[in-house]
Image 1: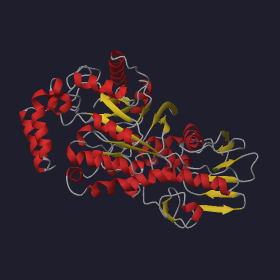
Image 2: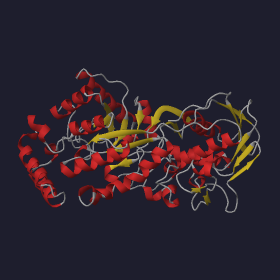
Image 3: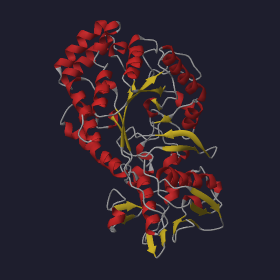
Image 4: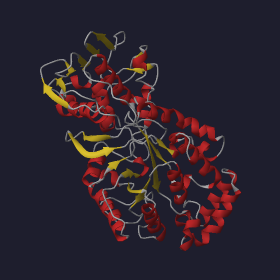
Amino acid sequence: MTAPAAGGGPLEIRHPARWVPERRYVASVVLGTWLGFEVRFIEQERADTEISRPDAPGTVAVAEGTFALAEEQRLRAGSVPRPPFPRWRVTDPSLRACVTSDWLPVVGVRDGVEPIVVSPDRVEIRFDLFGWSFLSLTRYEEAVGDERDSHGRFPLSASVAYEGGFHQRPLVDEYANVLAWALEAAGVGPRPRQDGYGVALTHDVDRPVAALEDGVRGLARRTAADLVVRRDAGLAMRRLTAFPGARRAGFSRDPNYTFELLMDVAEAAGQTALFNILARTRVEPGPEPASPMDAAYRLTDPPIRTLLRRVRERGHRIGLHGSYNSYGSAEQMSLEMGNLRLALDDLGIGSDRLPARQHYLRWAAPETWRHLDQAGALFDSTLGYAEAPGFRCGTCRPFPVFDLETRTALSLWEHPLIVMDVALQPASLQRGPIDDVLRQVDGVVSMCKDIGGEFVVLWHNNNAIGRRGETVYREIVRLACGGVP
């Protein structure tokens, strides 16, 4: 997401002989993938990581933290640092421009120790920049922790970032910026421009047609919500009149069938929308048990075939929405990916490598990434908080993922999810000032812009219904895209 560093030879990274696959992975992501440097690793007996370049005068030294632990501590709960972390007041104007606040949480440094020391031709970073970045990107704490919510997800409240009060800031990106600043200050390499801000509009197709799920009781309940909660009599009338024919050819009049609107909004903003499709029904057998949370539709149903065709006709993208129990099964994941590809082939619209996101954001470290990689997914976009906007991986930049068990980088990339509609305050989605919704989103959008990262938003088609639903979504896109549509 950043411009490559110009000129010069590769950075030489001299590091201790511990946690070698882990430290080389994170240094490659931060210095190579993000900052654009070519890197060369040199293993030495030393107590820190030193970065230099043969044709440059200076060096940057980065202190050890997580990687100073004995390797026997790897993947044990005690290997995760816990807050409180010192908050360092950033006063240098050029360094302040690298971070999103005038204070910076510094992991792995004692109170009273200056986190950054600058001397001629040398900058010392005395906090755990590489170690914390690795823990965040790989969701290490989720692999070693056993806290789970009712859907088997690692809860926000159990995370170090939430406990430390920085879950809504991209701390790993800020650390990368600090490292870029240090390399420039030491004369090692130029700091790259950060001009890569982008927006990804994504939509998980859970309930494409309300009538496929609603019997008469469900119809009555949702109509009452239209009148009492959403206060939209027109939406209630549309729901009632569309219901009799929605299971047949009249599905496009169903309130939930907002896909043409979502594509209109994306195109007006100059964006390409992504629609993630469930490829397993609630009663379909498979390697893993089916769930009531799975699809009430089949890939062969007319509403879905029409949607797939229209998405491709209009130049948008299709991805896999892994079923409720697929996240822990390579066989189930591959079966669903294959089924979706067959459905696309049957329509004659091609089935290149498809992106993916897991249903209900169910995800396990590191198994789910491994299963998606084996299924041939192009990238994943599951890793966001289910409870609030924020930065679950500490970053808004895409990155190649790492398997904590095999200690290898995979071909799969993660595009972290920053905002999901149902993670916003539920009442504000249905009623009250729209500014209440926008305030929850504005801060993280601004940080993504400052970092030059990617603002990934998930908005379900059934939350873009009625006057308010459409208005809220349009305003979110306008906020993210700088004034359009």
